[in-house]
Length: 339
Image 1 (cartoon, rainbow, N blue to C red):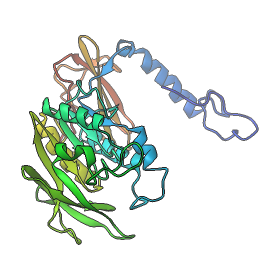
Image 2: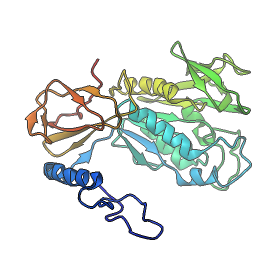
Image 3: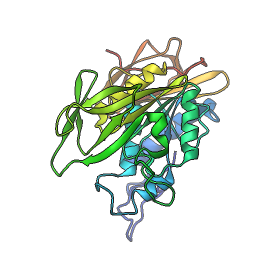
Image 4: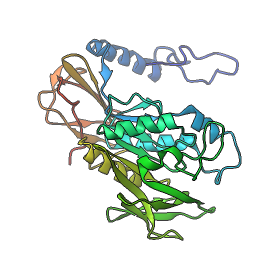
């Protein structure tokens, strides 16, 4: 936990900056809440040194981030690496899976799913690492405008997705950025989702399944989301910039295939993350909003903040938190919102 700053300045530029010790001194709400947090942290000594056991990783590639941000000749100014990465992370987080950040060349041996929101600059080594991961049983999900150029900013022969073409089983014939004020739709699993900014005309190889189609606009009926078997695993391609609901629909299918749980009901204010020691799982359940949330609780859980056994369902008040200790299992406990 990090706070900035300790004492509110009496003069100068930061005299209205937030702090732990405000102008009212120890009587201030912030000081009292910070003091209460300190007492809670003392009860969490057992959590020190534990680690999160993520089964999902998200590729953060600095070259692709820089390359797609430093030039003005992209097909659309809506191509924003950071926004795309955050959207993919947020969708997986809402489904209940913690996400690690990794390099495009791996290693991926700790994970079941690797998300690649965008790999604008892609090389053969990265493609080989992702292909190897899929062939060994992993699930790779690649986002739009990937495999476009090499490290010298030269377009790959044959166009996108360049060195990822064989893994994904698609070829991008044309990019179709939306004009201002236009939002299209994509159909996935019988439901329709918003596609607010970007589309691609893709040619799909034999043996590559279509899991979602464009449902409006010039590309209506054409494939938008694909899946290709790769060894013991699979590779998915998402050719559009979907909203949270659309990404969740795709990722739910990927997680199901990887035999990882996903929440049926998502709530932006609910967070649950488990840290594990050699013999105990510590699950932090947090309500980031003002609306009460009721969550399911693992059997035999003890709330470290109260020292009491937790019931089968637990109500988290506004900004509420519980830290639930259970014997370590093969997989971390998976908390869901109670019906």
